Length: 136
Length: 262
Image (cartoon, rainbow over all chains, first blue to last red; front, top):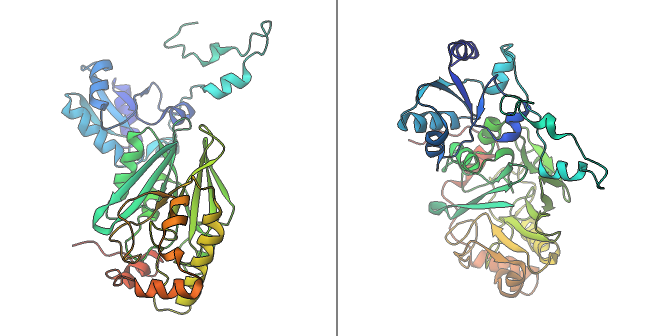
């Protein structure tokens, strides 16, 4: 699916499943995309646990052949998959489509920035909470 | 460190996936077209890793490489020893002796090991998540188990083959004895070939890993007394040339296109 087709499908209620690792997802993803990491072993099982079946999905994974394999695994598990984003995130950006970011912090960064004494509260972690999941 | 060895049995060839579980990034080393670029992409994805580099120990003569395709698919560099400049007909990221590539908590140190080919390098891996000592070395076609990479696979073009068989044998002898054999004894050895591969002689072990200490004690080729005996030993214990090696090496040098397998 071209970026325009994907954008139109999102407008009609389709949900984008972003199957890339967490770091690239955090650095930029399609608006309202859900991060569900790919692997062949248990993608279908995890999808069945967390995804509703009455929604149409679009796969975003890079590079080929990951999106094609992901599509077929989800279809075999009974999900409605409209297709996958052609050209990846670069194609999406090049088409002038909006990109969302999500601040993330890993264990090392958290450890090195944490307060060293009881009176130092360390970093304000509230900025790492997704307001869609954790209303502030 | 995530470390996977992929064995392609018809050619007794080993390629590798090295990754950092925390950085979620990976390098692929010496990928073989017979397994396909898709194979490596899916193996990395199964582990949640993005491929950030494709490394080759040398320009191969016995199998078609898929390093170019894999690097293009992932938008990442293709690395090769810097001495390949001038005689390969494509762009690559050059690696010099002592260069270090970082992969999260994994360090990949380049050791120039000319011999089998002039541009040959080995990759010494350290996993700082476990300890600061080097853990294993990917020796390509320099140090094999029980044997060494043959010095006589020349494509027949003296302009391209800047070292002849005698120079390669001497370089191989020096690279292994003066560089690889000065690594700590505990370091594990993972070669590009094992057993029946025609890139080594009749004494290659079918076992796909060893240690520096064990090869120092028990490698028949390197147990020869001196360079002349070593070179003679390699000639006497050589296998037939690899099938079609002139054509395959020409493809890997970028001198001709790979033909689709019928």
